[in-house]
Length: 146
Image (cartoon, rainbow, N blue to C red; front, side, top):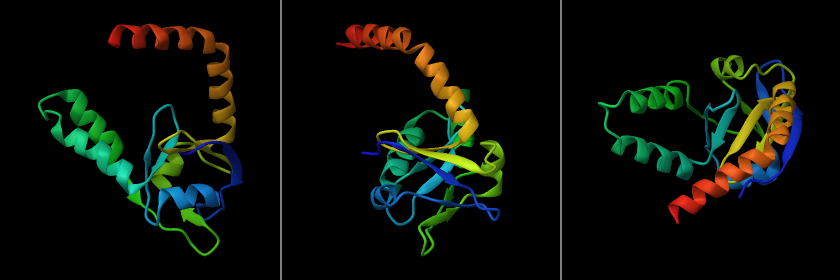
């Protein structure tokens, strides 16, 4: 399980240090791709397989399926770590997530999110302002499904 968040600097060549405890859980060749809300997702191969297997079973006649596959797959890349535990973030993904210097690497249970630090803090502030309402909606949804 991926927990906690860390601030690292994105190097000029696009390399980003990934915390050792995340690297261990991510495995040797995780997948980095566009995330939602302006971040990147960094996922272990097993999680990527689970997501893509679910997408493969969705009907291609549905526009939402095709669009989500495009979002997730077109810029996805398998990454490796160098001797210092850094991975190279592809330029297209750095551009998408507006990564420049200070970057937050955050655990999100089954995956890791990579955020521009300013965007991350803005998003967390927004979440904090709406936390009670979100918790209420989630509990109502859960009650309906049980």
